[in-house]
Length: 539
DNA sequence: CTAGGGTTAG
Image (cartoon, rainbow, N blue to C red; front, side):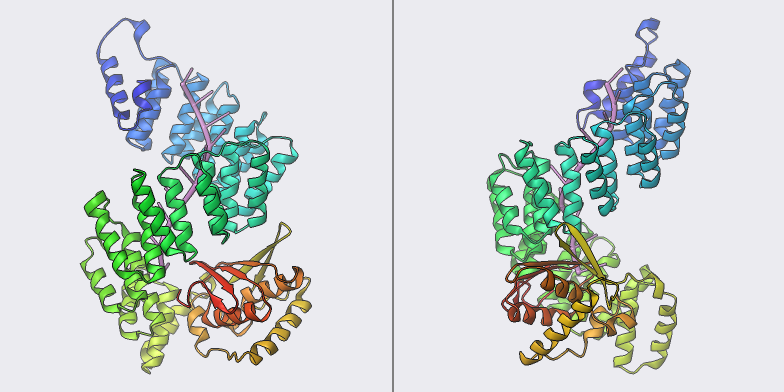
């Protein structure tokens, strides 16, 4: 049963064996005991993934009187949490007569898996003993639930408590760095790992590749990738996605072809990266080819995100009608995101009729989708349909508070400085605005004129009053210019998509001040250098 | 026999 329970594809055989064991009335010494249940429970989780079957085994455990065993109890906690039954896990935990550090850790990680980080933290604080796994469980919980600052914070505390991290800890911390764009911290961890002879296993390698890529340092990501002792589909996929995000489509495709030669089978995520690369580089035919090969060569059924990539690919290249036809022919029901991709390209190409159609489909699926409403209000204004305009306005009224404010942040000497649009709260605020005034003069000399339709691009995301102000990325850049040596690279992360006006002024700023600027927005990277951007003004 | 890790579309 144990062998079956830990062999992928054979888990359910463990369940059959158990049934067989019960059905044969053999002598009592050979009935299931506390050594049986951990394997059985694990098999049950991977076969069904449901609370109900766990409860059935649970009641048999109670009947047989094996419930007080610490291994059985701990496995029950783990099984319930993996199936989303955190309340049942908590009950088991409370009733366990004997608990050890593993039981406590199971609870911390179970709560984390169910997204209950406040309770997980409380449990962690109350633990009588903590080991490396306790710390790592809390860290990975924060990382996976998107509490990135907390992740780094607990990692610091762990160091302060004198607990040395291992590869597993590093992976979680690196993923937080990746999603924060915290390059300096990520680099520090990389060098710490080198100094401490950490294993460059597949997990660590993938996490490093992802971290460097998401910080815009795709060259460093490639170094890690090329020096890895062995690779698998995840490392390759991470590298492909990383290259794609950074606008290096040809290299992304080359990695894909190399992995085929190495006999590594792609999975669906690999194709997300490949299609994304084709889309960003305008490689329409290649994209169509790879999309077709997914099913034909690899028997991978395209999912919604692949269709989304294809809509983007076709639309970005200006084939709006093809994009629409593509959606119509989809064998699965398009979701908000697929229609959203069509809407986005209609917006870039100022295609109001099809865009309004897409917006209506979105509103059918998501009643108050702000992007669709903003597009419609704009489209109605264009055709002077004031009734339609009024209708949209009324719907939008209720939305105001729901929209995420635009913010940008910059990592300076391992401290993250964050700015909102029009923000004046930073201690250096005066100097920042003075810098922007100075830049405005220089921009004008370069022939820059603010673009009229600016509002349209960001209106869905940033509050009306805010876009009259200065967008957050400009504040972050000005702050970076003031506080870093001349000629050094500036890296900014923004939570939304960059607007057209900011994009063209940042291009010029990179030329005027002679700095490379890397801006990671919610979609992709912009590497500004000498007045041009790696996205070729298409994003 | 029990706990912690990487890649995912607009």
